[in-house]
Image (cartoon, rainbow, N blue to C red):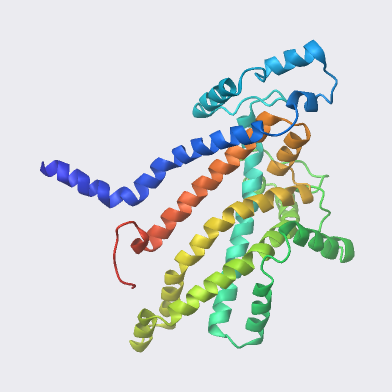
Length: 353
C-alpha cells in the first residue's frame, strides 16, 4: 500500500511532462489522418498530372493501380495509416524513392537556416529589450519603437527581395543568390547533414566562409521580420518585471546591478519562450520560402518539385514531417516554460520570486 502511494505521488509529481510526451504521438497520428484526406481532396488525377496526359485508357489505369489509386478511399486510408505507424511515408510517385529518406536528406539544411535565423532573432530581441528598459527615452529606443511598429508589415520573402536588391544589385557587397555557396567550390563531405556544420567539421575553410556569406541575407530577412514581435513582447515583460516587488526588494537590499538584471530577465523569459513557440512554425515556413528565393534547395525545392509534379505521396510526407516537427517543438517550448516557471505546471501554486 505504501509503495503504491509513493508511486502515485511520483506519477503526480512528473505528470506535467509525462502526459505531454504521451500525447505527442497521438496528435501526430491525428494530424497524419487529416493530411491524408486533405491531399485526397485536391482536384485532379495525380498520375494524369504527373505524366502530362501522355497515358490514356488501359495504361493510365495500370499506372493508377500500381500506386494504389484504384482502391477505395478507406482502403487507401488504412494502408496509409498502417505505413505511418511503421514510420513509412511511402514511395515517391516521381522518383520511385522512399519519401522519408528523401526528406531526411534535405531537412537538416532547412533546420540549420531556421535555427540560425531564430538565434539572430533572439539576440536582436534581447539587445533591443535591454536598451528599451535601460534608456527608455534615448534616441536608440525611439528608433526601436518605430521598428517594432513595423512588425509584420512586410513578409519575410519581401524583406529578402529588398535585401537582394540593396546589397547585391545596388551595393554589390553580397554574393549572388544562386546557391548555398560559391558554385566553383566543391560540396563538403556529408557528416551530419547540416551544410555549414559539415563544412566546419570537414575543415573546409573556403566552403564554410562562402556558406556563411551566403547565409547573411536570408538569416537577416528572417530576423528582421520576426524580431519586432518578440522584442515588443519581451520589452513589455521586462518592464513589468522591473516594476515588480521582487525587483524593488533586490534594489533596496543593495543587490548587484548585474544580479538584478538577471532576475528581471529570468522572470521575463517564459513570455518570450511562449512567443517563440508560436514563431517556430513561421520561422520554418519562412526558411522554406527563402531557400527557394536564394537558391538553397532544401525542403523548399523538394516541396516545389512535389507540387509541380503532383506527387501526392511526397506532398503528404512533407506535410507530416513538418507537422510532426512543429508538434515536437511546441511540446519542447511548453516543457521549457514549465521548467523556467514551475507555477505554470498543472496544479502547482507559488508566489513570484
